[in-house]
Image 1 (cartoon, rainbow, N blue to C red):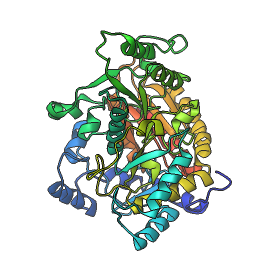
Image 2: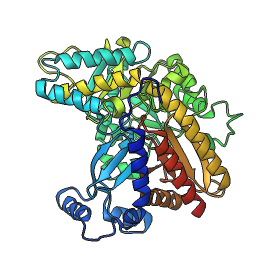
Image 3: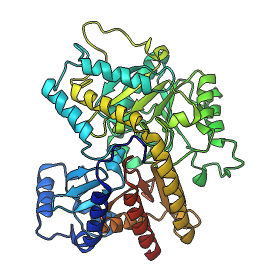
Image 4: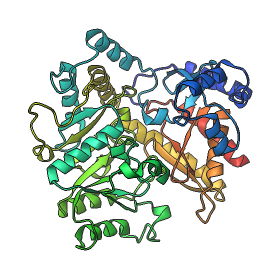
Length: 482
């Protein structure tokens, strides 16, 4: 724990909750199987009043893991723990999509939100700025790498991606983008035109999706598209990308930007080899193409640095941020260099890009406090230290089951455990069983990867060590029994 970090729960409280989770095992195992409980009644009500295909439903679970089981209905959280509506606590090893980096219901964030809500809940976007928005943008510019100091805010990661695309097109007067296979940049129409994670996302909407995106293989060294070995590859994937940029007949003569995740998140927690991101930066610079980095998942300490690009000293032309930017309030940003945004047209009678909730003062107030906590408690350093220990322990477990665990990888508190046969054939069934059986032990996890064959870990950056120890104990038991 950082010397400055303020624990959200006492050691005794954490220990007591872990003990309660252990004692609740039969209750977890029985939950979600259709009994007449407050939780299942709420799921029934949800199915009646929300698009049935939007979130985890009985049919989805039945199709994925072969059982009909209701999703958990969350009620409240504290630190690394989250409770369902029936009062059962869980250890949240995913920080609710890596958002709750500072812990659930962080008192300092709640205080910041409350104070701003009492002062002013809503501003006027790009027309009349609020003082809170101005302070937030200044704080963001101070933390961002290099000369990234001019931002446009929005509410979701997908919106930040779309804003970045507009910035790139304005700056270059070009339209094509290069993205990476298995990338995930969001599911709104604009962001969907860049997402390469799953064809199923695009199939129903293909006629309205922009086709000016070229996909190239990512640096997934255990599944190299070029059949290379890590020690001898010479970044074959980047040589392929460079050839596309240089070859007059490649069909890529109109490239505005390359967009990349420094570490792929939903694509399976894929960590490229050292030097890959720096080489990508050099290729973009040499070919007059902008580099957009999507750090919506990896930003704000997740990987053991303020931003994942900091590991290699890389400064993109545009950086997309969200998730842990506030730790829970919907707010995102695309932050660019002055050289990029000098091409953005001045507003006349109408803004060329805006939204009603642009720079919402409540979101900005929470973001300011979140960034203060991040630096004060040195959470990136904590993520690096805890992540190293967690990765080492997981690799020791994997060594006992090489028949089913294909790879364990990660950086900081962003870790993926890939389940596959020794020949690389994905074992989606095993990954989903692990997720479900960990739920039976009171631990929340999610799958990732092109085949949902990867179990992903992205716990709150403030997760107490006893929670990680409890996770490791349960995970080792479950993997041994598979």
